[in-house]
Length: 271
Ligand SMILES: [Zn+2]
Image 1: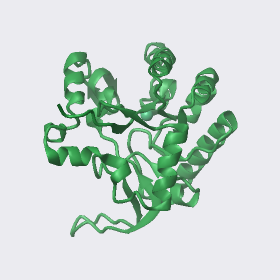
Image 2 (image 1 turned 90 degrees about the vertical axis):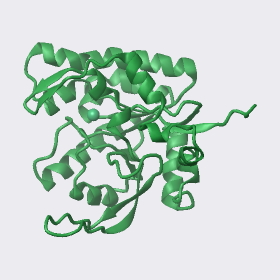
Image 3 (image 1 turned 45 degrees about the vertical axis):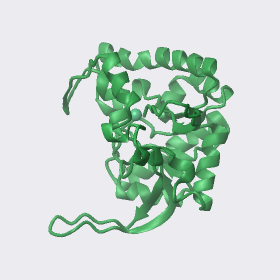
């Protein structure tokens, strides 16, 4: 019988809470805002579950959520979870200056409340801009987790990309910020949350068992760990082509110390 193999996964959770509803969706009704309030209830259940299973994880926390729910931040810190940057009010910045101000405000809040400067960043709503790449580098962030340019393997962010519409995409130079990619395919929010907003309707309300079956097999059928090629991919971060670089080691170490990468036998991830 084949021996059990250890698989490393990144388990990440975004504690958007009320910030998503009043910031990202522009909600003003108490009913809509109360859905963000439920984030505290969900976070407390998740913290208890993670403690029971001995799993440490990475939480991307908007500054607004941290200031609204300091008790959740305290419990996360006490539980050894990594707290990473997720903007301030879960909004898309209106200008480069606005973007810098939001990044700095979120960093100030998390540093003050956790005693540690956040090392990782996830753009609210996965809206990373070219300008933000430069800001993350200039402010010494170790990693970002907003892009989908790979599935299991981390890669470097690039500076100087251009996207002309009358010619091929132009790739800039790699910089010392590691991208740990995510996918909407393993994110539970689109699957479960029914949302009507200025942007349209997100149907959500999927069957939990159907989502579990899909997530258990990985982001696509081809990535299920039943074939040698997929198993190769599943070795993931620690065997990546970046594994020898100082910046990757720092990202990996931050994840292990604060926690992000944990060892489970399931390849599931929640972004
Ligand atoms: Zn979010």
